[in-house]
Length: 297
Image (cartoon, rainbow, N blue to C red):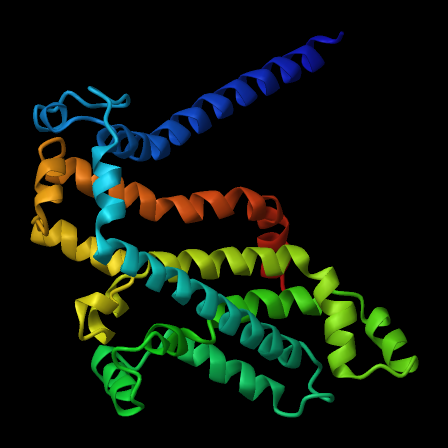
């Protein structure tokens, strides 16, 4: 093997090893908080209070999870978050696909297309602000309802632009052939565009699920009653207030084995579980969807 080629091979190996080491360290940094929370949630109150828990449970117990599942406020907030994700993802996906399909057409097909695109882009760059947005939600009677968490974010413009560029990258010949065979726009969208856009749709769905599930500020703003808080808003108030409410003698007995730290850790980990469960199924589409969708067609 020539000397120059051997040097290139060695350099390549060093580069690969360094990359693996750096990515491994980065992965550990990302996993450490989650593993610490998980270990803390399964540890006893004494172990958590004395700071003996790092990455492995100390004096293993499931008392914090038993108390979390017996807390009606936690279960109610969990149900509100699930309802929000189902409604929010459905509304977001439908409107995003319809808007992106229309804006992906050429100007001679959709007159004023450029104006419409700028209309959406301006709303992404300049918002009305918190007070005007709150007044709009209040005047439309959405306060203290699940729709206050869904409708103000019904059309995520970033996702529209992502899908719009993905649609524009699809071969025009397929659409023209469908029109020649007598198909209309609805049939072209359903039978041609959507089946070819699974990576982009999966990526956008992942963005939407994470955004709705992790959002907490709008729940505090738009919900007058804490009973209607989504899960993240409830957890935020729980962490800030630093209190552990007691409701019954049975709970008092259970609280002997847990502390505020283990209880909060259990609820935080339970709140992260749905996204952790969904992510592996959508992750394989992520790179292709975000790459193709971000290239202007």
